[in-house]
Amino acid sequence: MSMTPPPLSCPACRVIDQADGVEDGNLYKLEHYQTRSERRLLEAIMRAQDRAADRVTSFAGSLNFVYIHSVWFGIWVLVNVGILGASFKFDKFPFGLLTMIVSLEAIFLSTFVMVSQNRQAARADIRAQLDFETNLRSEIWSVHIGQALGVDPGHVEDVVRQAIEGSRSHLASGT
Image: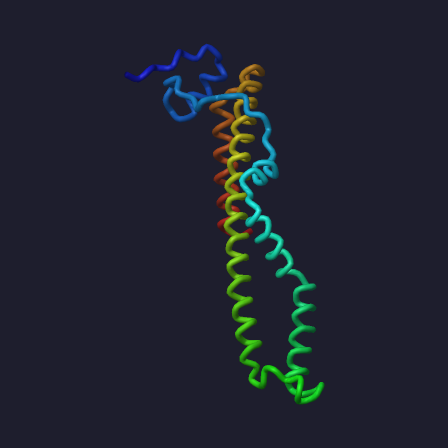
């Protein structure tokens, strides 16, 4: 058994209801949303391993990482070509051990990068949801204010449609 929503008594709410082309009283569940913090929401879903992956990725994407590796590779090569004496060589040319270590490091670093990218995607989803909630709140307030001021919503929507079409055609033409 489906319940039909009660008729909307507020003229502005009826305008919002008509936006989908049908005045049926079915609005999204409209609650007063408190503004939520993206950072707090993200911290709530982050685990220790996510934070560690972000720290590793942040360091691996820095110039300090490049400098440390340049020095490390330089010392490795110099030691193994015999600059400190033949007794110190432990990885002869073509430096197979160095190649294996660098390959393993690349595997782990790429995994950390992918984990961080997945977290960034989750953050973008949270941001999109918060943007939607903010836009919804703004639209509802705008319709109510417009209704109180006697603004014709049909005219406003026509102007908005024209502006959007003009913006899209401007972007498509590249001018």
